Length: 289
Image 1 (tube, rainbow, N blue to C red):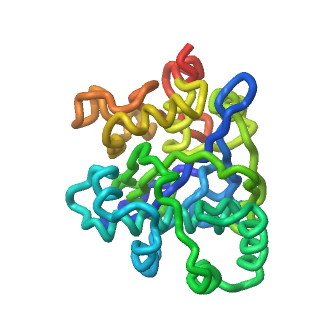
Image 2: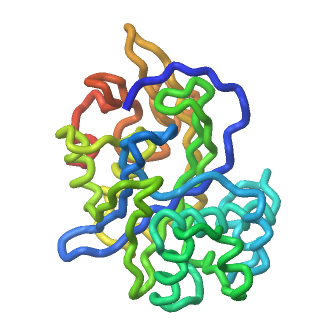
């Protein structure tokens, strides 16, 4: 991963990401996919599956199991219309399915697997699923956080306004990777993913570092889902600055950030060193030790 110093004053593209969770014998695990090395967005890094809103996503609002008004309330973004809020849930479901094969819908595991195989042969999400009358399960998604790329972008040349959702995998479905946008996938405890990043085994972008740090404070899916339901998701607007020749990303609660109240556990800033962003206090502050 390379440091970029690109000013992009255009609007941040509306996007959605899904953090898949499962309970392991000793810890909570999260699902990560490795972006293709040639990808123009975070190539080679391990990320949560997701992507940009498509114009057609909002057209599925009537096929969700939850009303647009209720989904709008859960996101806690009054500037959005209920239709736009519903579209973000559809984006999350669509991108998760396209990238991992997990389909949050009233389908059997076999139907999900068969449809994913067909998707990789060429037809799009709408073309495959619209004729089936399938209902999408927006109720399976729980808003977790919102990340808005700053105008001075540090790890990508594009800006995104991404809603992070947490969800569990429907019984019988098995996530994978499409071998196109993603070349590998893995279930890992959040703490192990952070250790691997620290040891240089995997690359993580700042939103993934901070999100995994947040998740590392939990030991079960029930704990995460309870936290997600406890209030509106925090909106994270990183504020970058260059200090003594090093790029520093500041988060809410940092003395250099305009928002004084801390929004996430862990560090309030990450500094570019060793060809990556890392906290000044080292690995321990990420793990909560």
